Image (cartoon, rainbow, N blue to C red; front, side, top):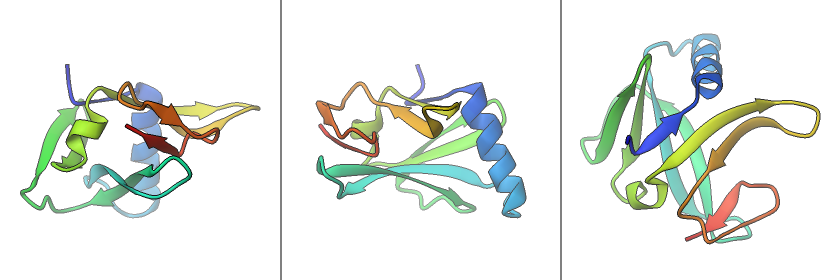
Length: 109
């Protein structure tokens, strides 16, 4: 099992955004930082360079990198993209989260 699972819907959306922002071929960086109502928040960005202090893996058409500090908190995470009436956007399913806020943007582990 990969550290992170990226669904086809999420991968397609990430690739579209990369193309729009003029960053095709960049890696998707996932990370955890302090903040939010539950203590930790998820972050996503595009990165052209790896720092050397991260875990990287290849999805079929996308490189995903996670810094070593965030890796234990993101192990087994599934990243999905929803497009619907009740919810739209990226959704992170984290088996390590002990508690999440109602918006799903913050968690505690």
